[in-house]
Length: 274
Length: 262
Image (cartoon, rainbow over all chains, first blue to last red; front, side):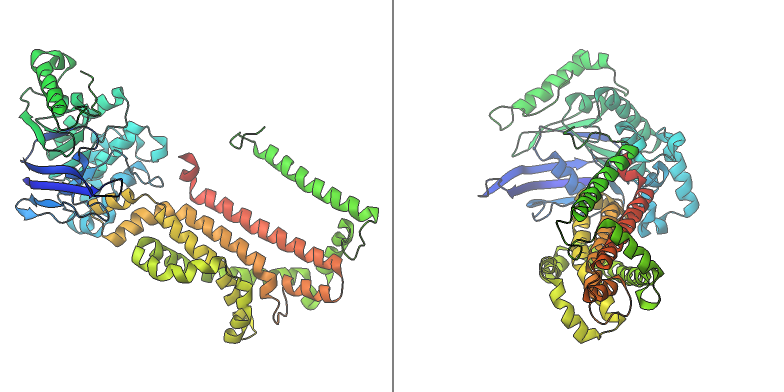
């Protein structure tokens, strides 16, 4: 599945109420089948906006995109696409449902009830629960789980649909370092089991380098593509690799790109833990 | 002491609550016994208690239990109408800013309007029988319930609906499976408020041609200047409102245990 973004410009009404704030300034990007693509950039540079455009989520009261086109397999993307599923930083699990019911949540909708027979729904849910390591917590409620476990539920709920594209909007951003690392390992494992193209938004350089097959760096707003490179090192990538010549050169390159953006202060808020 | 979040055991809460009530009754008894206020204006607690016993043993339309049942029945029937009509209307208003724009100028001002003033019109349109009383209670409670249900729906963060639609829900499915269940505890709160409002309006509803009911009893005894019985009638309404309120709150805790867990 191919996603093509061309000439994407996004403007929002300026916070002062006069004029417009240009967040994305002519972004051209193509995502090819089956890769883990990291979209890296400082806060407010429009990386989530780009992701939402691909997911068919439009902000309220604003024309989006202001200019440019989004094509999914050559077709203009105007709204939600069955094969493209998003996960957010907020888990958004239903608090009144059990873990199992939350994973099975999309099967409440007519679209998936028609597409996936009941028996297969059940087997997929079981498989996902086992894959994210929550089979023994299937009957717990979200309030009885930790943040990391709740995000596992959200990931399982997305992958149970076997999407061809998974769009992740800083899904591990709210988790502490140890749990974030566990979730990164889990994500790599899940993608190996349930192959899908991933576009993963982050502002954490370490996360981008540890996970990505490809890293796209956006500049400070109005954002353009500042850098776009691939990483051939096999996963899982260790701390040692990050400290190796290759790893540290890549980190330095990203930092330089972020600082070389349009902003007077350079890179904005970027987390570097290398 | 001055911490609203300080945990308090249910036993402690009961003791403090009874202490507050006890003090109020003690002051009431003290004032009544002192003879400073004539019993006509403030009957003593023991006179009210005796009046209650009297009313409980009375025959026909003056029987306390019969009256309580008649009022409770009206409150119950009106509540069913309030929920059946008001909840879907509130959900509809909360789910669409266009529907809200059409209906809110009709609904919102009614909250501060004197619904009591509408009673003659209700009587004019629905006659003086049971229907008019229930319509009046329905109207009085609905003007509170509908905006509260609307606000409960609007209060659910938009991301929940966005997620549901991203997972394949139609806009209506997103409301049904994502937004509505999350708003439900607050909708039940609105229903609890609606019952309370109905109990406050029950005496007004029973002003017109009631044959039975607590409001009818209060008016009848007011005409007879039996103010101890008027007090007793008010007391029974308060107790019944309190019991309904507590029962619904208990039901709410049972239905939504996750609300307090989170």
